Amino acid sequence: MLRWFDSPGALSYASFDTPRDVRESLMDKGGMLRRAVRPAELPSVPASESLPARGESDAGMLVRDAGIGHAPGTPSDASHHALVMLGAREMDEVALLRFVRGADASPGISRVAFRSHHLLEVWAPGLLCAEVLGELRRVARETLPAQETDGPLSEDDRRALLLRAPFLDRPEAAELAREEVEIGGWDATVTVQSPWLDDYTATVVLHPRIIETLTPERMGTIAEAIGELEGCDRVLWEDAEAIHVNAPGTDPAALARQVAGALG
Picture 1 (cartoon, helix red, strand yellow):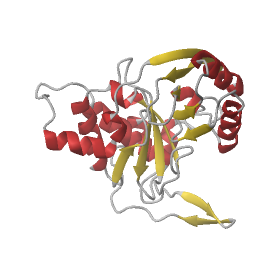
Picture 2 (picture 1 turned 120 degrees about the vertical axis):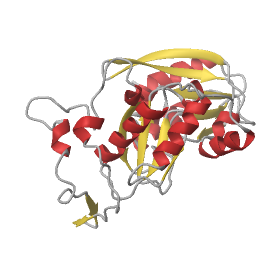
Picture 3 (picture 1 turned 45 degrees about the vertical axis):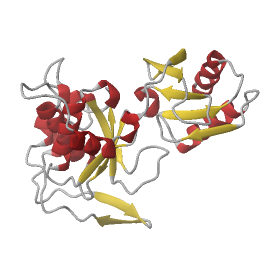
């Protein structure tokens, strides 16, 4: 959404600072444009203030982008999804819970939940993508940096966090193989890890830059390519980040190459 911002002849961050009483979100329905119902409480910080980076160590920029609807390949009733560049498992759990609760309390946002390590689903009907992204960046700046009062999570707090990110309770997987691919001029990785789920032999983890490019058609192509490997009898694409593969005897490096080739 933002990659063309601030380029000649295109939108800028300031384009989203239209007064709140006239700003409307338009959605297509049955070939007709209709006005979406706007929430009673709207973000108070203008997009031109919340969206731009504030230096190299800006925690807000961990929330890379936001889009309409549920996360790729994971049907739900979420109104938006966001891509978080630092995986949830890599964040301090105290700060992560603080971020989730801060996002819940943001104007116009009713709830957020991590679908996977890098994908956050957002329930904020009626908000523009720029408003959702701006609020998440604002909250990240306020909640993710370490605070003096930080301490271990209580049992109740840990349980509350797992409700929003259940995958955090899985044992950490071991890396078995890795391939690099180029996505839009950037390096990205395809990593084969030890299985995240029972009854599978490996899990293929995709870099966030790859996730950004996924469409249902591309996901189907990748799944078909994996299915062509000798010994592969089952492929489960649980979410956009993780592909679970049951292929006894298959070399993890061959699996990584097969996915990287399908992405090319």
